[in-house]
Length: 258
View 1 (cartoon, rainbow, N blue to C red):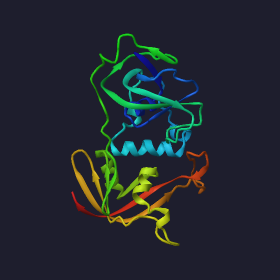
View 2 (tube, rainbow, N blue to C red; view 1 turned 135 degrees about the horizontal axis):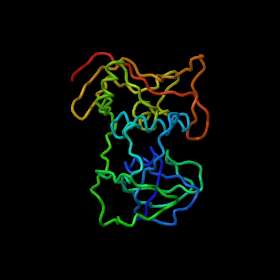
View 3 (cartoon, one colour; view 1 turned 45 degrees about the vertical axis):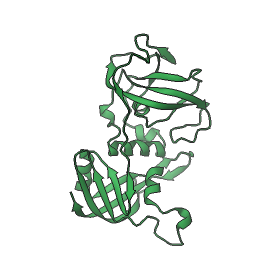
View 4 (cartoon, helix red, strand yellow; view 1 turned 90 degrees about the vertical axis):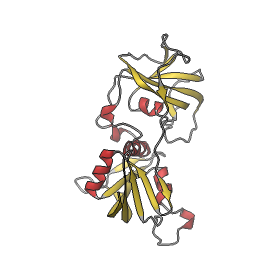
């Protein structure tokens, strides 16, 4: 079966169905299912500094929601799942697309229940002769846990560790993705001069796999960050513009229920 070796965290993002574009300088010359091999190259410590604002935000939110593991828990030198190459373009509007000649469109992603470990990668598309689409290890699709609005209550899925960190800090930090901004911001066309930018969200419910905790919301605001010298931390956005790094900070008040 055709196989593609990809660095982490991109390999796991692909088989999780979160990353729908693979950026390459060469055409796949093939449409159909491919195994995804996670290469041996470790995620660099300065990963966040090497990637654009929008992509880092997507990854960090998915880690908070429990849809994607922390980098130290990723698999390496292993075939971890499979996906279907459904097309190739150079004008995708996906947040995962980069300005390269070939943006492979990916769909129908599956994670192996147990990775096939100890496999060396190769360049380009290569064959893994012992596997074919009819005889693959047990696999599953990620059931993505997503934030949502229920009236004036913002519901956010989190991990157990994430919930504890939030309770300790008494605030929720959400990265500024389109998904989050669409949930919490008022549409621009509805804003009047000087009006508060956020929707009237009065409470937030944090959901782990085993418990739910609801809080009153004291304030929602844009949170900007400075370096030690007081200058603003900068980031590059999807349009390759330099911007001040920011996220959405939600200050919590009283616990409503748990």
